[in-house]
Length: 148
Image (cartoon, rainbow, N blue to C red; front, side, top):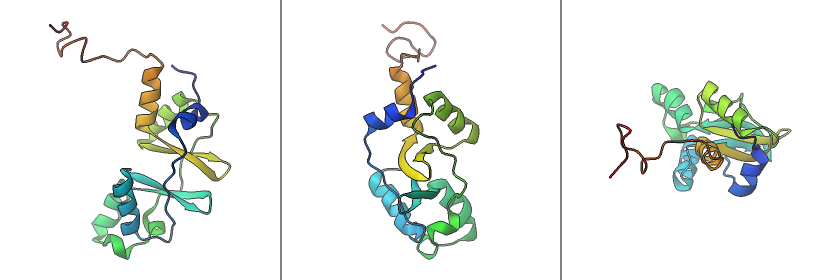
């Protein structure tokens, strides 16, 4: 497994962070997710991470209550106990956390300050470039025989 660390991924990824306030409506958060093509947003007060809201949070917490997204505040459905990593954590640790806890976005913090977010796609891309042996559709067919 790769010995790369989070800081390397953040350097290559860039620092474009999209966040939401706990006082925003869920409708506002969902609109940001749609326009930015993301499925979760860190919830911050200033630069401090206080939670995370995802499409799943809305579906699992608000939909069963038949609550309209414009009637609910982010703070009412966000996940407050957010699992985070630091810049020095390994990509292996990130992948283990994501797989164990079944989430797709992992905030990166320095203390309580949000410094980035890694997605499962970021991790997979980084590990692919680490020359792990992933099957390639161009080399083998579904049955394993070489393509013609």
